[in-house]
Length: 323
Figure 1: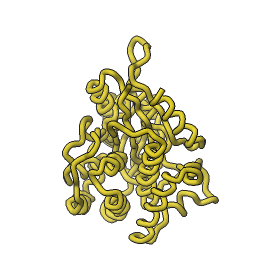
Figure 2: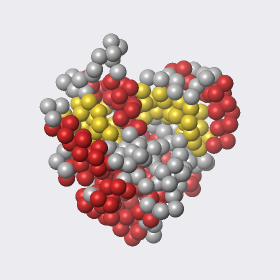
Figure 3: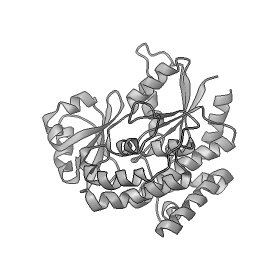
């Protein structure tokens, strides 16, 4: 039987209403969501549920207010993992990218749920106080090509590598028109992500002191499950305050992380994507593609989607894992 790898993502794939079907129908999911919302209301005077499940909003509207998206992404993915575990599918290991690494560490017991959520909810104010507005842009081109492009180099930097031919660029907000025009002129498909800061780049270095001080306050424990990091492209062990800042600041490399996981598990893994939009499943699938076109030993399942049907996908993942 393949080992089960739960996967968690960061900013970019969020939308209004994510996880709503599960909130209304799944007791384990709802319990975590309510607990997280109570923490946010008590400590920050803010309800993630009220904003996330606002009836006047739709999944197609831009959801980019970091004060809401940051904690919402954490709670939704953690709640989805707990719901899947309650249904009988438990992970053997965890993989995270960006904010998703904090979800993985919380699930593995490295960081307490409340402490992780509290620190994540504090980050937006630190960024707004110190950093200028930025942006993340997904681009369908090899990272090497973009890194060598003088116009891209003058306006942006590579903030992440998702798969061969897929990367994320970080840029100042004011540089977006020039960057977008250049990418389009060179036939490079691209899309701005709903993120107001240039994470995983030197553009957030002004927040380093405050973020490092916050991470130094945290209690970090030994992981109860192996955690794999897209920041390190390998195991996240041990977790340190310096590493927590690197997860926010340094480029992510999902492609290298999946490659390392596959090398460590030649029998294949069953990747279960708990990100809200299935973005990680798509990236993992691209990284598993074989030159001969044959099927890889690993398998992939997604759970959450803006199209709904989350509960059914969870049940399907459970059947596939045990089939």
